[in-house]
Length: 391
Image (cartoon, rainbow, N blue to C red; front, side, top):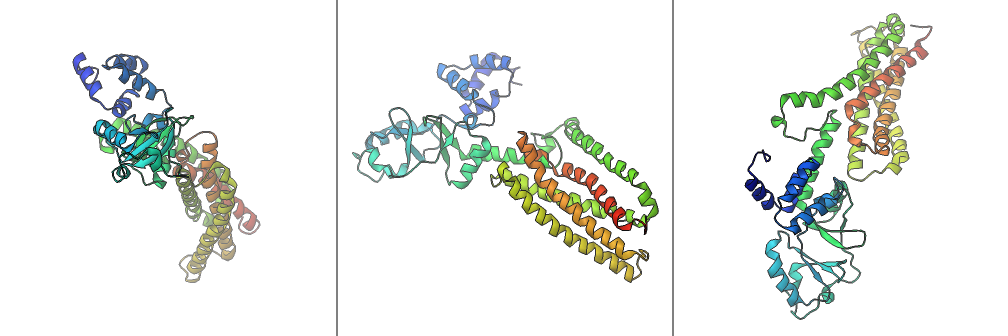
């Protein structure tokens, strides 16, 4: 649509955008189109600013920050600060905080604007600065996720952005953080659900694109589920000799998939919030082994009680060896649920280690993995306990 506009309209459109909206628009263009659009900016300052911001990595704070902020030197008087605010404040949407810098532009402190209103106008800014106070700031190379965490623990409308030499470069505002947080949340939910991200409202996505985004993961998961057929074929002789075992396949396998999906969702969320790091994998493994054992035991006992009850009230006859069948289900559930929690919790760590997105270790993918191994555990346990009796 923009390409079809007359040149005059393109120039008008591009120069009327705020620096942040201009970056968001231009960062998705090809290099050739980007060079053409930069020429349309009507001042050298706008061109330099745009090139400066686009030079930072995608998803970094450098792309998020805006160059509009109030910064004064520590040698100024309050009167000089007030004069500066009257002159520059009208061009800033966020004037809650005044940042204090030295002559080299290094960030020293930050002071709320109201504090300048209740002191003598001849007071020096350095006298208002709090001693032993370290301003909260973001590094220009921080990721969007790190910025979100900083805002979540600091009740601020904006945060300053500095480089590796502590030079103040700009600010990041809460509205941009909320926008990024919402976008990341939507992408993660879609990945956890087992599909590619849409980056559009559901009702606005073309049907062909919707099918394309979902088909890839479904094909991959379907191929993975084919392995369950292979496992069942390998144990077909076991099923033929003890048909009763086939009745519990959905029960045992789904329990493992559910426990794996639970563990994966918990760890992915903990990683997103910064509660869990890669170095914590051993702690997580130990916790999940314990959780998996007890959760499997609870489900195993429930399954055994079900077999006992159905057999005693003559709702279903499990045969003379019903106790061994119940014990098989009990031990299988412990093994399958333990494997589910272990694989579901460790898979995000593996993906993170290889620089991937932990959200990609979606619940459906973990469930497919657990299904295959769960069948092997179930039939192996059945053969071990029932060999020479039912098998």
